[in-house]
Amino acid sequence: MEIISFFSFKGGVGRTALMANLGALWAALGRTVLLADMDLSAPGISCSDLAGPWIDPKAQELGVSDLLDVFYERLDPDRSTYDFLPPSRLIREMASPVGDRWTGTGRLYLLPAGSPRFKRRDGVEEGLLRAVPPPQGRADEPPVQTALRGLAQEIRNDLAAWRSPLGRALDYVLIDSRTGVPELVDLSLGYSDRRIAQNFR
Image (cartoon, rainbow, N blue to C red; front, side):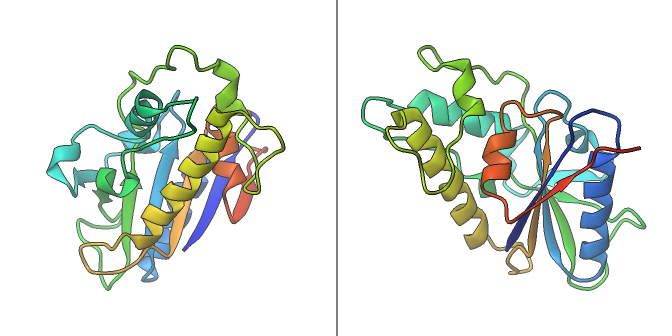
C-alpha cells in the first residue's frame, strides 16, 4: 500500500480533481484505491455524486472528523494513551465515472471528511494539530504529540490490513489535504510515502 498526499498553498488549482482523476484511472486499470478526504474545511470529494453507500451501515455520515473527535475524547495526555475509530469502518464505495459499475477487479473507495462538528477538546492547544512530529519522534515531545504520532501509525496499519468486499488489499491511499499548511496537513504529509504539490492553474 502506497500513501500519496496532495496539497497546495492556494485553493482552486485543481488539487482535488487531480487526485480523484488519478484514483479513477488507477481503479480502471485494476487497482484498489482509497481517496481520503482530509480537507475538513472544504470537503469536495466527500460531496461527489459518485460517492456511494458506506460499506458498514453503522458508519452513515461518519468520516475523518469523527475519527478525530473520538481520538481527542479518549485521549489522556497525562498517560500518553489514546484510542480511535478505525478508518476502515468509515469507508464508502464510489461509482465508476464512466458507468454505474466497475469492470474488472479495480475499485475506488472513499474515506469521507465526516460531519462538520469536529471540535478541539479542552486542554488541547489548537497548534498541536499543526505540530505532528516526524515518525521517529522528537526529543521531549508533549504526550499529545506522541499520541498523534501513534494515531498516524495506527491509521496506516488499519488501512493496510483492510480488505475490500472483493477481498483485495488497498494498492493506493490518496489524501486530499487542506489548502495551506494547517491542521491535518502535517498528519497526512508526515506519514505519506509521496507528496504531490499542486501550485499552478
